[in-house]
Image (cartoon, rainbow, N blue to C red; front, top):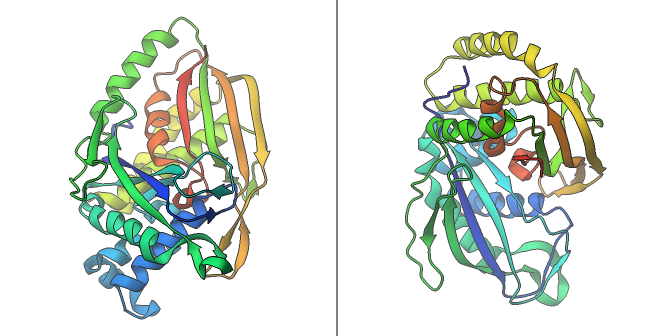
Amino acid sequence: MTDFPNLTIHHVRFVAEATTLIEMDAFKGSALRGAWQSYINKAYCGAPLAVKATPEHQATCPVCYLTARDTGPESRRPFALRPPLSRQNLYQPGERFEFTFSLFGQHTLFLFPYIALGLNEVGKVWGLGRYQPELNGRGRYRLVRIEAYNPHTGNQQVIMPEEQRIINMPQIPVTAQSIEQRKQKLLKMLSSGTPLVLHFHTPLRLIYHNHLLRIFHFPAFFQRLAERAFAVNQHITDQTPDEARDSLRKFLAYSLSFAEKVRVLQDKLTWWDVKGYSSRLKRYHYLGGLIGKVHLQADDWEPLLPLLLWGESLQVGKNVVKGGGWFTVALAK
């Protein structure tokens, strides 16, 4: 019921090297997304804000398809960000850091050159992080390598080798087939009773029944993840909203009974109370959420595992375009 046969997700990792001092907050997703979005909006689309938000304009403007949709529901956004996990604030010249853009759907993949070109120009001419008076601007970097990867198969593809400027297109997406292959491998090992571990690398910020969840609750997490996955799938395919809602309703009616039986064996999650600065709103906003690991056990993982594996790539909760809700699935050691 969670095959999503037409959904593809391309993970593209960018490796950057600081050419000047770069200063950022401990959580770097806001700075990366904000710098990239500000640059491509200014450089590639001069339409007024009212025009940028219209569906007709977004259908023809690649930049606004990527960025103007960012003001709507999370599911409308055709990408997610995985920021650097190091909490260091300063990058000295010569230090490297990496981050990933995850692109949802084949249509978004065709816009990959705008993402890569924009990130290259941000590092060269726009700048990243906090304003530094001694630089008369923000920190600078250069892109040194770009690669695609599939977390389920382990395959990697060099898109732009070091010391070269030729960029190839990503060709190793996450698909229903790669999800199924990994699911079968995990089920064989889970059948022995080995606990499943969810590792939240970036803040999981979930709103459930109008309340912010500060304590992990698997059924609530699973339901929010299902709502996100079915909505994303609807927005990038030909499925109608009514069809998506019906599919989600049927899926939850079947799977939530299994989710409610999942047992938390160890909860090693903590709350990271982080904020990010919005240049558009001219103020800080809250990005905090749960990070760390939670060990889970279930009598039957088969109805739940496909959605969890899709969730690794989709991310979940608030602020996925700034890096929130990135988690991975593993077996307890």
